[in-house]
Amino acid sequence: MNASARIREYMQNHGARYTLHRLNQIARQRLLGSYDRRRARELTPPEELQKQWENQPAGPRISVVVPIYNTDPRMLREMLDSLSEQTLQDFEAVLYDGGSTRTETKAILDELSDPRFRVIHAEENRGISGNTNAAVKEARGDYIALLDHDDLLAPDALWRMADFLSREDADIVYSDEDRIMENSRHHMDPHYKPDWNPETLVSDNYICHLAVIRKTLLEETGLRTGFDGSQDHDLFLRLGEKTSNIRHIPRVLYSWREVKSSRSHLDLKTCLESSCRAAEEHEATLGRKVDALPVRKAIRLWYEVDPETRIEALIHGENVEACRACLQELNRCTSWRNFSTALIVTDSENRFSALNEAAAGSEADVLLLLEAGVWRMNRHFIRELLMYAQMDGIAGVTPVITDETGRITHGGFAVGLESGAGCIHENLRASAGGLYDIMNKVHNVSAVSPCCMMVRKDAWADFDPAYRSGLAGADLGLRQLRNGRRFVITPHATAIREKDPLLLSGNVRDEKDLRLFREKWGSDIEDPCYSPNFGRKKADYRF
Image: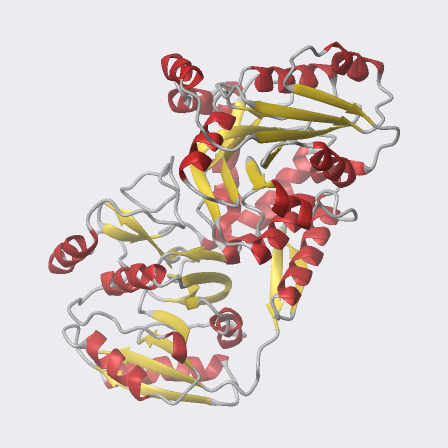
């Protein structure tokens, strides 16, 4: 697909305005090096690199495995240079050449003299998965770092991994990453990642690079042939079945090469289909039946649900007419068999105590909190929410809510902002998707608004009745996170609601609630679903 065709496709998926924004962003990064300047500020300064060299961590030994096949000589040299320049001294690099026929590639490998590098020449190319597995078997380290043959490591990448593992016992540690142009001129598009978010990973392989994995765990799991192009996604899904001891270093330590001949560029459809197959098999292992399909360059999941599930909608508002109008809208969009409702007419002072009381008295399996004023729910609204609310470990699921113009008024909450918490990607057109196309994918968030949330009755936790605003939802989210439960937002369930204090929209804040929230949680809250590298004024994914 040529550039103009890709732009047209992007515009169809994300809208003209966001496409122009993205084109401008890419142009500034490619031509002016706008991200390079930020990256230079984020890189570890030379004096600190020297201190790292002089103070080696007493962590486990790391083996870097690199599957190689007919690699471009310039890119291969740059990759090897990035390994040679590591501030960690005690590591090994296992360079597994899968029968390269390119003379220049073999010559570079044969000239290596660094004692930390071991070159293994195989007679045949087993593909990226087979070559990686063979390299892992040859590795002598306690942990394996996966590195592609044309990518680059930051000079302190391995030192930071070893230092982390010297202090923390983890099975997997991963970092943030960015891209480097094929001609090596500029770095682009930093991927500032969340911490371990299992539901996000099913829809999107956000972990990717750099990942350091306990060798015994990697040998037990291995990369599977037949998933080339999505082998990393398949690997991390299966690793997540075996461990949740997965940690994140929020620094860009890896740069992956933007190569036009890569499989993800040439055959994205096949890569997505492989990821869908990996997601289906992963969920089946967890006892969940799902159909996965590639839709708009993302993975669309359709889980099986129990049609006999008893659902009760708790519709809350300050007058009965508004509650009844909301009920009428809800009845229009669903024909769920075992469905009941309760209208809760209450003011802001008593809203959350009334919701707690109604939830305690419900005999339903699943509760749907719905504020009067939410309307125009889409088809399958109830089912889309139930697909995730039914899962173990889920504290609640919410739709994407917009105003009548299609701009987001609720996309889940990020916590730890200057205002305590805020709506993610507020005022962005929902169709745009936002950075990393996150609003077009099912993903974890730290909290959701009480204006619309579905939760299993046995996963219910009371709201703190001392709150009057949507900060009650942020408080609930932090308490549920502390208890090991997660929240999910699905873009496949949608509704309309104009801006409202319960949604924490705009600059509307309840100062009493904010003081209460800060007294309880402090002002320096770490949000596991929102990178600390983003700004804290708004939850808009700005660097």
